Image (tube, rainbow, N blue to C red):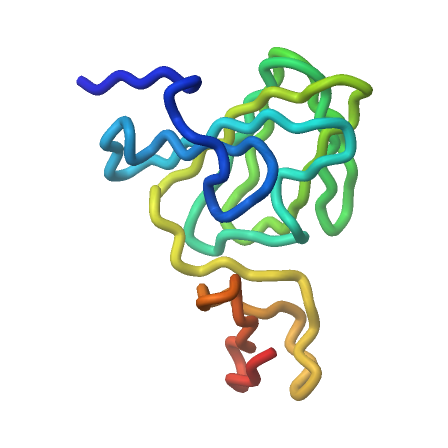
Length: 149
């Protein structure tokens, strides 16, 4: 059994300047990812519309209201509600309330290795690019033709 106080975890997970705290390492999870978010109005969970081809995600809203957008839909998720995104389902979410948003984002399996961004490849026209970690963030690589951006 492992225990951690969210207040004891430093914000800034994933190199983000919003209050996001990675709890997985502190809890010693091996198959499950959990992150705490405290977002101001207009702040986003992620910088872009994306999907994990190898991970499903669940967002639990503890305080405030979040707006999520997919390729085909927009949905508001309020306090005490949760939303699930299947592997391969493109989405982005943000704080849609006038106050703070407190939420937990959970994913399984823990270590997603195939993150895609909804951006067309300029060479072959494939409809998404793979986000590959790089020293200064991410490099986008076309999974079809290998073009790098």
